[in-house]
Image (cartoon, rainbow, N blue to C red):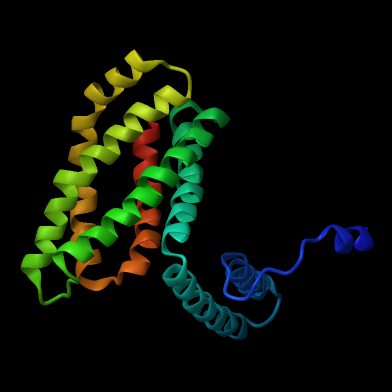
Length: 225
C-alpha cells in the first residue's frame, strides 16, 4: 500500500502555491490535536497547544493574505455546510444532504467569493478604516447593510429552494416571506459585528471571522429556507 501511494502521488506542488500552504496548515493542525489529547501534565499540554495555536494563526494569516478569495470561499463553504446540518437537525431532527450541499455551494459563491470581493471593494472605494475613523466605519457598515446584505440574503432564500428542487415559484415565495425577518436578524447580528470588523480587523482576516459568525447565522436560515 505504501508503494502504491508513492506511485500514485502527484508531483510536489510549486513553492508558494495554495496546495503547499494548505499542507503547511495541516502539518501545524495535526500536532495541535495531538498536543491537546496527549496524556501529559495539563500545564505543559496547555503551553504546547498555545504555541501551536500561535503558529497556526500566523500561518493562516499568511495564507489568507496570499490567497484571499480562495480562503474566503473555503471558509464560508465548509463552515456553513456544518452549520446547515445543525440547523436541519434542530428543525427536523434529521439532515438532508442535498440541502447541505446546496448551502455549501451557495455559501462558497455568495458569502465566500462575492462577500470577500465586496469587502475588498469597500476598502478600495471608501478607504481603509481604523478605530479612529468612526464616520468611515459607520459608512461601511451602512453600505454593507443596505447594498450587499439584501442581495446576499435574497440569493440564499431563492437559490436554496431552487437547488433542492422546489421550483422557481416556491423560491420566489421564500424570498418574499422570509427576507424581512432575515434583514431584522441581519441588523441585530451583523451591524455590531461590522462596526468592530471594519474598525479593528485587517481585510484578509475578515472573511474568516465573517465565516464563523455566518455559521451561527446559517442555523437561522436553515430553519426557514
